[in-house]
Amino acid sequence: MSGGEARPDEARTTQRVDKWLWFARLVKTRTLAADLVTSGKVRLNRVRMEKPSQTVRIDDVLTVTLNRRIRLLKVQGLGERRGPSATASLLYEELTAASDPLKPAQSSLQLPSWQESGVGHGRRLPGSGRPTKKERRDIERLGGKSR
Image 1 (cartoon, rainbow, N blue to C red):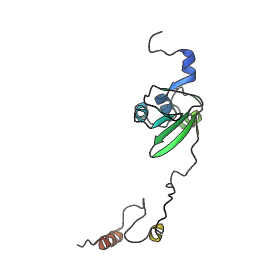
Image 2 (image 1 turned 30 degrees about the vertical axis):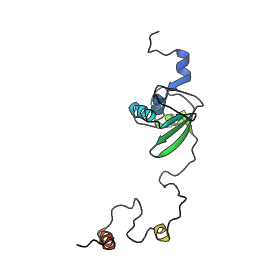
Image 3 (image 1 turned 60 degrees about the vertical axis):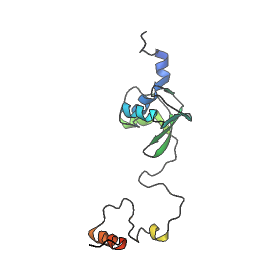
Image 4 (image 1 turned 120 degrees about the horizontal axis):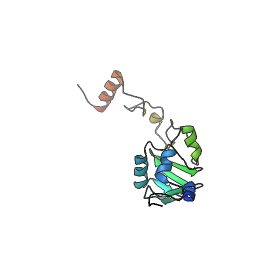
């Protein structure tokens, strides 16, 4: 055997973490998967992974930080190729609590009443788009800017 070949019995029970992340469609490319691991955003059974060549096995628990979200994933299978998302979702079980991705996480802080309604004092709701011309004039008037 040459140095690059894996033993047949080992290849069926383990897989490189960067390949697994790519096969499970958590990232778009293997390069991004490797960067995710080297930046310390992947943990295997609570231990931080440092190298993309480290291996995962079935029943391992991965903690992955993606897009400001922490996801707990239990490895259910090892991929052979990057397939459709329906097949990729069979490779893991999501252990994190289900939340609506469109709603922001609930904050424990109490907002003032004028912020709860989303109206008042030149404040706008996040994600409400650009202000209209009237709203822009009101904001400038409240801020003390004059033309």
